[in-house]
Length: 180
Image (cartoon, rainbow, N blue to C red; front, side, top):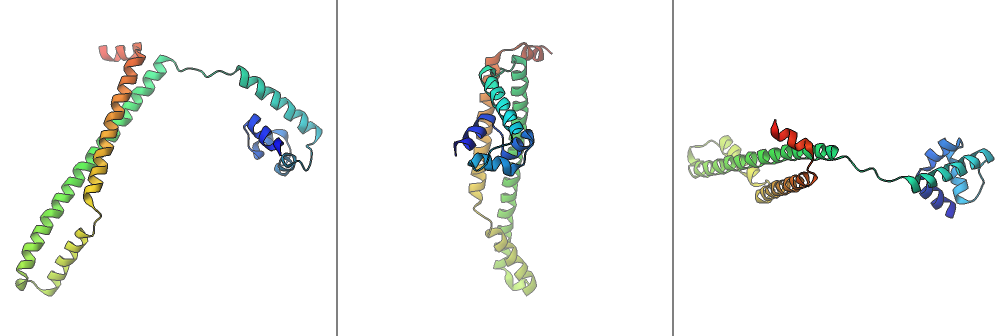
């Protein structure tokens, strides 16, 4: 029924919140929305008052614009968070590259040892084969490296955009920090 859409759209509340506000049960609100029952008179009066107040507020409410200092602080916090994320991604990239280098050295050593397997015991040979197969079963490493590099580039681009936005706001807050 239209009651459901109109009441929820106009008040912006859920059934539970509306029921608490009107001091009725949620099931009474549900039945009212479906058109099966009416609300008690006191609840209808409160609902009417609520709807008139919400309509008045919607026409008079304007979005408050943030002050330039608030914008500056927000953008500077964004830059700090972005730098932190860039450092984390750079650390992941370097750790990943080091790990790949260690795996390459291990594979090279295992191939050399397996060529001279006549000197190895069966136990040592099986451990060596296990370690090489474990390293080979890792997912495609190049795609992970590419993904990390792309993430780093995106963060760098985001930093540029934030800095441009910071320049556009031109507030005394940045001038004070530059002089210090």
